[in-house]
Image 1: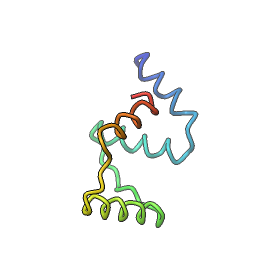
Image 2: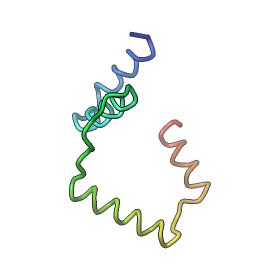
Image 3: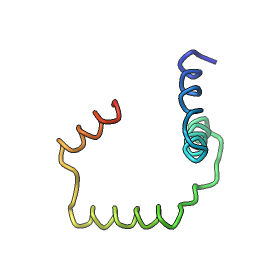
Image 4: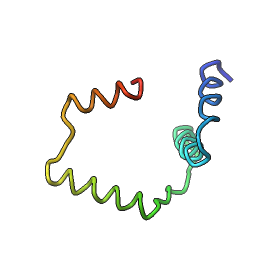
Length: 75
C-alpha cells in the first residue's frame, strides 16, 4: 500500500460509517468491481428532486459561490 493510500484510509476511518461505505463503493467502482447502485433515503431523494428543479429553473451557483465552497472544503 502506498503512503498516500494509507493516509486516505486513515483520514476516511474518522468519518461516519455511512460516509465510509459511500467512499468504499466509489473506490470499488474505480477499481472495476461492480457494485449495486446506492439506495437513496427518502430525504436524499427529495433533496435530489429539489436540486433538479432548481437546475431546470436556472438557479445555479455563481462562480464566486462555487469558489467559496471549494475554499471551505480545502479544494
